[in-house]
Length: 297
Image (cartoon, rainbow, N blue to C red):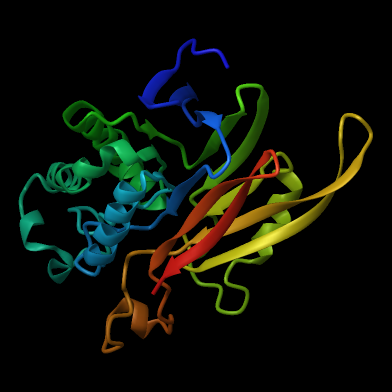
């Protein structure tokens, strides 16, 4: 594999930002017993007083200890308490954000919180909350946070799009090459689908995202893993089967609380699973396999 325009981020590990919504992770020297993990997250709503920061830290620390990478697909910020937001409420502000430079302060505090784990993040994508602030306030929260993490904490993070790609390219035994393509999206539509929980979207995305091995979505605060078996035809004319995994990443926000009151409860919305999804990559029979599993409460 050529090292042109690649940044080394560890032994046998390189990353390239191919475009503003495509990044590539190169992994060399795959051998018997090799394994690696990727933590897929979204909807942290970190600045909300209802964010489960203890669970956030638990997963961040686990990623650090396991030398796992993190793909975050948006709504890292909640930012619903700005001056021009009709949803704002004084009770919705954490004490440290009760300042005039509200948007500046949430970025500053988030950088301090995520700074010790900056080397674990590969991509921080954008969600509808960040896009709303960009549209109405002209402030790009995602880029501002990524800039701080890269400059102050020596990260090499891409400020991704609302949708984008993470390509993982493996070099096995110095000669055999393999790729796993991950399509990420913050997610679409409403945040409450009480019957389907958004699973119907997997069939639609499987049609128009045929190149993806894994599709990661967030947004509706649900959490599941849906494997779709596919019949394929190789370049040599051999029929084979594979799996396209559709992953929904959950949230760290506990809007339901104890069910006493609030917009979430009063509009009839149920409790949502808190947490993320681990994607384990393991070497088996001369290929790397993806094995996702839920890490929720």
